[in-house]
Amino acid sequence: MNGSTTLRRLTSPLALVTLALVLRFAFVLSMGNRFYFADTAEYEEAALRVLAGHAPGDSSPRAPLFPIEMALGFLVGGRHNFFAVRMLQLGLAAALSLLGMRLATRLGGRAAGAITGVALAFAPTLVFTTGMLYPTMLYATLLMVAVSAAIAANDAPSARHGAGMGAALSLAYLTDPVAIAPALALFGWLVAGVRGNRRLFGTLAAAVLTALVVLGPYVAWRKAAYGNKAVFMQKAQYVLHYSRTDSLLAEGRRVQLPKGTPYTPLATGAFVKQELRILREQPAAYLHDVSGEFVHFFKAMPDRIQTQNQYNRGPVLLLGAVYFVPVLLFSIVGLLFGASPARKRWALAVLVLATAFLYSLFFTQTRYRIPVEPMMIVLAALGVVRMFPALGRAFADDEAGTSGTPRA
Image 1 (cartoon, rainbow, N blue to C red):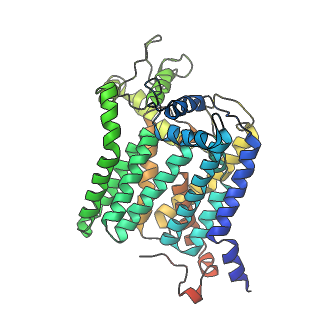
Image 2 (image 1 turned 90 degrees about the horizontal axis):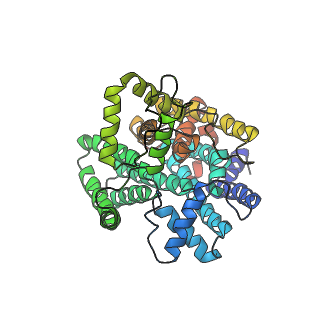
Image 3 (image 1 turned 90 degrees about the vertical axis):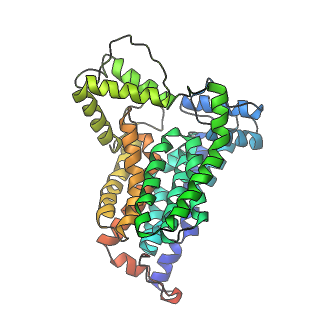
């Protein structure tokens, strides 16, 4: 067995998914049967309502899909069995790793797929997210399904690929309403390709139709329950209001509202009107906030953490920063010069940038970036392959008739 064959076996999808699962399972065991962040209590309450046969609840600002996942874990393992929920998260982690490697291989060849698999396996934020009991892992997996389907549709337009993208984005919205931003970006990316490939019309139609079918029942229920006043990103609105009225956070160049201004959760249209009004009244401060939050979205060292425990102490946060810096740098290289057609690289980038832009309207935290980090890892792998072409040759498989090169 030569060195190249050994390298391919050690970095095969099966080997790397196994590695990712072993690392995450060990981490999950260290967490015990408890949760560490206060927001999980809201998801648990909603999950228990689902188990009782009710809707997640009008008092919950959370989207329904993760509470349903948590309820499934409780159904299998018993009420309050967080270990069972984390086992479901392990399944999502395996799916995310496989999808990421498959997409990277499609775009940049075997070397890109292997680099992606190694990075996904060891990524501290993704390991942590598996046991966090937040919707982050579910949301990240659905985004990866969506972008994979979109790129496959770009190569071979079909109703099947369009339906897959539409279903994944709809389910992502039911996991976190922020999905509206990457959804619009990905649809826009496909529309931009229609001029060169008219067959994409059918793909887009299938995506829209599927999204309507998936979201229709939920939208009808929301309208019956709340009328047209469903709150848009309620928790994010609250944090944004707090940042504008707190005497410390709102000092300096940030947008400032009079102290004691009451918090009123708003529907999407009302929120947009509010933000446009503030932009007119405080343009310099508003643009300062948006640009600052956009940059903060990509900040390596996590901050603005309120809950303190052993998983967000200095050395742990530093580990996350050390991991993210090369991912960020190589992802920029991958976007600009990566070993794949530019249009396909931009499919990944628009998800990241659209997400960063939407969150820049609020008050960002590092964990908001985690769902799009797998896309950045794929871009980074494409950048590494471009900068070190010998890696592509090391993964060449003459017997299979491939050379580790990306598809056109």
